[in-house]
Length: 431
Image (cartoon, rainbow, N blue to C red; front, side, top):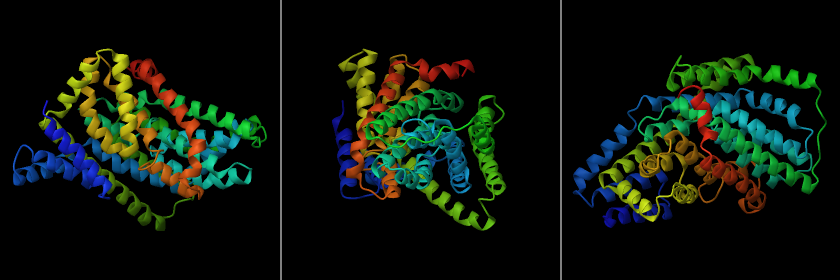
């Protein structure tokens, strides 16, 4: 095993992060330094630059800016309010009703927008003040909002699953989308159980029971928003259009819906487009840099070396999956989700395939692992959004976050060791 490339890659990447270099540039510069262990500077610089450019040359990646834009349109288009009203009629009378509403609304919002940040922002700004007014602590409300927002990364449509499809060499996006439903719902259910127990222990208020008429009324109002799931996912699964085409349809649908609800006006569009472009630029730079690092690692045989090392420890799938889960949980604490998927998929996927595991199943495991990292310091983007909206501090939110973390990890290990939880739906559609 060649240790020099691995040492240069790890030390340079961590060192650059510690001195405050942005993640994308840290990835690109550490890739360049690693490449220079094998070839001289000018060819190394040319190669890394080319790999950043060619890493973005993918039709599938066109789905990301469209889904980002549709998420922004949903956030501004009044969809969140209607989903929250619908969720209130379903679970508002249960212990911790407002917390449960947050989880269900976040799952629905995530299933439509596919963005944890959009969900955390929308749910936190709408439900946060209401929870505080009803006697809930703002720290508990923030903790529920932060963790429940990540379910939208598992429940389709999900940009991260598209990125995994690219990194894995073409795993079916339709299969990945279908595989995410049960694990995402399972995670949401576990979060609801923990939130309900915590609320009961703290003696938080219980809301009024809704009549069937109220449920039907709010469902009718939310129905046009929920139909986006049928249009986008249904179209992909039955083969009417690709994921990229579906993302463009999602933009058109949400734009028309925003006008229908009279929440979006033409004068709002430049700002929405500008925010979408900013988010897309960040994501695409991360993807390009991460693809260059992935190629450099392959060139230096780093995935093969790590694969041999792990399989040398044990050939028991249970042990190997446990090690991979622990490594991904650790990685998620220090690295954003998109680069982590692009960098570590080529490392772990060969190990998984040697063990006879389905790449679709592993994709869901990877996203569930890295979702936990979005809720933890020091780089948890959803954590910072949730804390900022709740106007509290990370130190105060950690205590109510811990039992919710446990719920997410229990769901993760159930999905890891019971593959049919993620593979049953794709198998129904022969995917």
